[in-house]
Length: 79
Image (cartoon, rainbow, N blue to C red; front, top):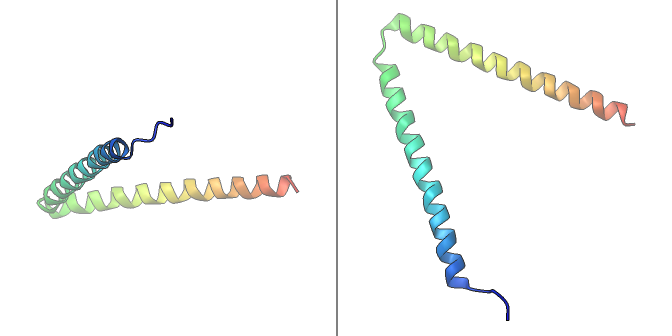
């Protein structure tokens, strides 16, 4: 006989999904608290925080660009 146990599989799947949902809820909760804390900053602190986020976005974009250029070079080299 096979090891087919649909109810056990459903139970395990539901437990795993519950863990995912719980983690997502906690992340959203922490993000909301962070947003609230950021909103209560002084204007100069808010500007500094925004500038820091912009710099991080620029660094991420540059890293993605370099990775894409490397992929292009690799694709051209394999032809």
